[in-house]
Image (cartoon, rainbow, N blue to C red; front, top):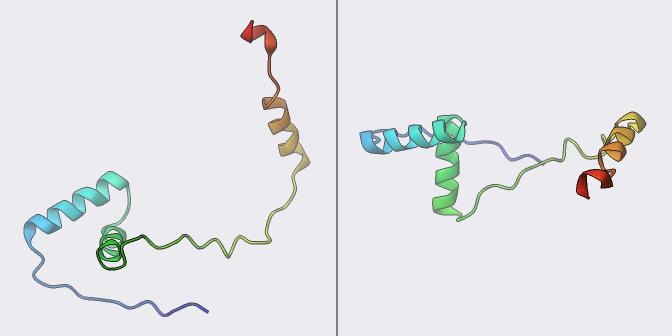
Length: 82
């Protein structure tokens, strides 16, 4: 069951707070909205939200060709280690 997301409007954000949030968002490569959500979560709950991968569960499809490539990469070339 997904909970309905709420929406806030925040007014009178100090310029320094805006500047720091934007700087942090740019540094992390995420949106301003995402940074605000992370900061609110950390300030109130004390931890970030857990990742939800439920949409990926049960979707693994075996790929023998990919497995063969990984197996080849895992071989140790002992001549290079001598």
